[in-house]
Amino acid sequence: MIQAESLLRQGLAELPLAASENQVQQLLSFLRLLLKWNRVYNLTAIDRAEDMVGLHLLDSLAVLPHLGGERILDVGTGAGLPGIPLALFEPTRQFVLLDSNAKKTRFVTQAVIELGLRNVRVEHARIEQYAPDEGFDRVICRAYAALPEILDQTRRLLRRGGKILALKGRLAESELAPIAGVEMQTFKLDVPGIDAERHVVAITVRD
Image (cartoon, rainbow, N blue to C red):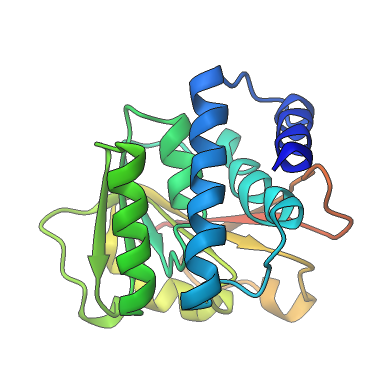
């Protein structure tokens, strides 16, 4: 974990993010939990701590400048990504982490308890069946689905003026085709330690 910690500290400085020592230690605790549970539950195909730093932790935190809002829904959170790293850095915002996979939500629930995250709630449900009491300012998803499918499944969950943030790798031209009643903005993300394209597509529903 010594090398992973060094990569994490260097990456946070490059983003740049002013992380407290407590936030760094919480990220490392989350990383240890993920490594431990991954051996049994196969939560992610990435199994080296050093690789998880860039591909999971820093990749999640790179979207922070685009976040905004008070209530955030992480759809298809999987192993708690990007929701848990974001919640660690945004304690005043409320996060709901949603996934249909029971073993993954069990892990995320345990991670939330062990990290003492009071601003996170975990929901085990399919997105089609999820019916919250109130809407969200942001709906965020990472490696989830094509943009039209994301929009179709999540637009009903947005508050007025809310946005969908879709975290993507390389973007195909076909995926960025205009969608009626929707405004899309694409931003390139520079993630330390990752030699691959990363983007966030911000989708605003106008009607």
